[in-house]
Image (cartoon, rainbow, N blue to C red; front, top):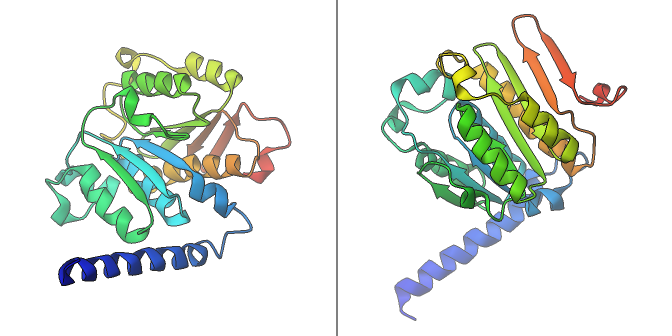
Length: 249
């Protein structure tokens, strides 16, 4: 082994050791709330890395998820800066590449699989948890069908307006049937996409609701089929949840 290779190997070993040492520290403040081992075993797929998907991926990396797939076809543009939180020097970059760089800084132990293409069912193979954060109802249906066929533990999907959002959760046959009934074709959707009029605080809330559903399931806590939040009226509604369980939310 030459000197250069030996030095590179030593640096890599040092990084790996630092990652393993930092993992417990990362989880110190919430290890009694979210089970660390379950987090570190979780393999998630985030489909769509715009307003909601970017925020969800950041939160997942921060809490210690160690396996993640990112799928998005788009590049960062100027109108994405405000509602989605990108930096100005990221304009023109592929969203998945810009997000990958930030996620690796947040959590060096994160194993990332990046796909800068349109969604295909094979993108979620090996994933246990799917976060669907796209703005097209037909693509949502494609992701949902693939997740159902792969028996994904949780399919979490967000729908968003400027100051209102919905988080949909599918985790069993009952919630799967309910989601199908709540789905509608793109031709019946509002003429504007959900991110045409968007705010960063609303997209952050939508992402937080999705990640909260994920962590609740890790703890084997009940999760509703739908959460609707209206930031104008400061109201939150739950659907498909047993009475008496809403207090935990």
